[in-house]
View (cartoon, rainbow, N blue to C red):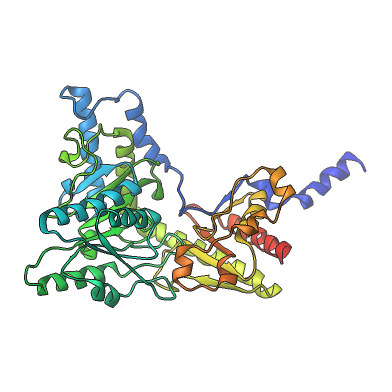
Length: 429
């Protein structure tokens, strides 16, 4: 064939994959750093490298940057005072500080030692509670309904005069369901008001997965403690915050100097603090736009997947609440299909997604290992604690994908991803 003929045939052979390096559908795992956020942090990795505790000008510039960021986070959360925001290393430390700090303070002050949480919390909450059980605390792990939602009445029924902390996440990281945190806070307050001693019960919510996707306002929620994780909202990894309502007693967990108003020792990471502040300012300004974009992308992707499944008789179910859920998250289960196998096949085509915590067997084994023993991944599939709590049937649970879109996910990316996912399922049927 002549070179002219070869050139003429090339456009017909081009695939969507050749036009893009990757399709990222795992924004619930982590997000890229927003360009404006990157610009906010860079000066503090360069000429403005001062220690925020130093009294001279270089240090005072850093101190001012921390103050601005604290005000930005507080404003986004609707906090009454910027000093209610404590900066720390991320969501996990924030959760540990909130749950351990409030529980230990209550036990020290009043001898109370009962905690209420749910069985679908992030592992950071569950592991913190397990540790507290070794320290003499009793923990009630509440069940959820088929949508993964906690019932307010179950929280109320679990409360006792010994209860000191209630920790319920705002949005589930796997299936996207929103929890009735505001209603739970009100129920807890009513319970406290009816008690003779009226000892306060600290209400904590892990809002890591919700911020930047839905409105998060501490006054509306009525919580005493709220967790923020920077890398979930287009800030870098390694930075987070804890909102502590004024008057809430929380024991210090990280001891050292007097940084963070004496609440968390350690020299401030000014660059990352500034980045988190900027990320929160962007959320406060653009939340409505972000939410609409993500909602439209989610709906389009789900529609495309459902269309493929209906045409080829693939049995599936969508998990989570149909209305009260994050605008960007799809949890979809395919009957008698291995999620790790799907993930391997679509990754080979440039599509990055997750099984959430549904399967812990999506290992990055060498290609040789996969070729030698392709059935290996089938052997280690475990149903996630979230799907198990929702009573998702095992034949569906093992084939669960979590697909989470972002602020800039393009329609052509979604079309390509839907095709790739369907192709993978067809290969495995």
